[in-house]
Length: 515
Image (cartoon, rainbow, N blue to C red; front, side, top):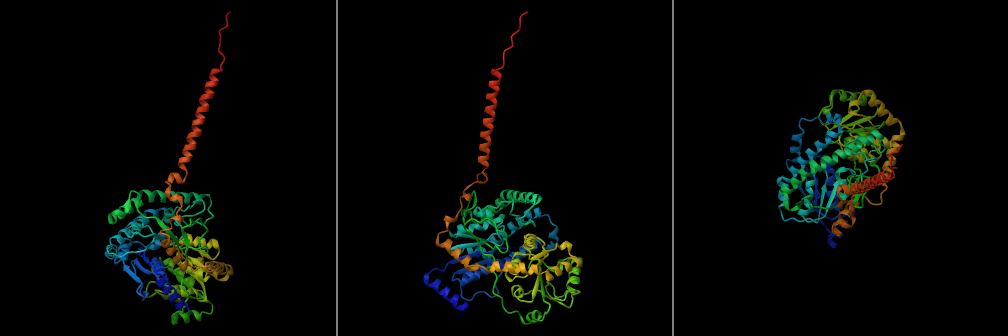
């Protein structure tokens, strides 16, 4: 029935002439980002559109209908890795969050320049190919917005996370730092006075850094490669639509302007049968299975020896079986109840009814998938948004969190036993799962509809808020505050001078008495 449905949709699109040519650009050399980009591209192809995706990765099993084209950014992944070759990612857990600001600016400029100078990318933009709409992942790559001007097409931005400081300004979305924590911080929406102070400082620091350092560098990159599409304000491009990899079941409720749409979970597929060895492993786990993965960027073998030993000792004492995503062929000291693998079908494993707990780094895709399947988590966050995701899981009651610096056999055992034996965590995970599933429209269908919408309505300028036409001092009413201050000061000065004159004029004259 599903195949018949997709065939029907495709035929309708072709017959009605509604098939669009869509350019999808996901330049970040991270596997999780490619999962999001490729899921979007495949979904748009299934809806009957012709898609060209630009990424450092390629789909090993692309759609065979001729409507999917891959432009691989050869060498992009290696270029980024060369800048980080001496960095142990686990050391980032101790880095001050403010340090991430210049680091991400640097990485953003490297990624953007690598994309714009890539031979395959230049071949694409120098061809006579046309696109009806351009979809770009926003991740510190502002210069790529010139592609909308280059192709004279509406611009759709997709955020690989929820609303944040990188995208809010593109559509004029308000984000009060009083209750919306920055993604670099491990805060929830219930911040105390100190946390709100730090959050405000982070907000101001990022704004100053972005405005005076990052934006000029990105504008120069855009001007170098697309001089006709850059003016004094930067790339000539209006964002028609902002798609967010977010959902109410995962993130806190925050303000959204009309052209912001939540499509979190669109990459999650219906569960498939596991490979035979994994199926038997999970089926035969009478006491349950614990799945352990630190994502696609962190290498668990890079953990210090103390952390690895604590994990081995704590996991080895469990009666549950453990699937551990491990990046090497062998794990010294591996307990008998642990099965390792360099790759596991994560979504399908989490869907298995015997999986009782997910030990994770707290990445957003992993968080989304565990909520989708209703599995509680033990988060061991390291960097980026992982700490904030972990804090949200604790606040929502479907998980616990441990710093990599706090890993000990005792702490791990206590946390794992609490999660396994206290039903509230699984109940809360199931409750969140019910919220994620309770949708009138599937997230991929929603993304498709809105992309088609902005094309039908010539960029949908009617959704654009007036905040985008204001300068920063107008937006924050600084000019009005100064005007009112000047008027009040003038009135006070005038009152003072008048009173002074009146008082002086009423002073009795002193006459000398004559003897």
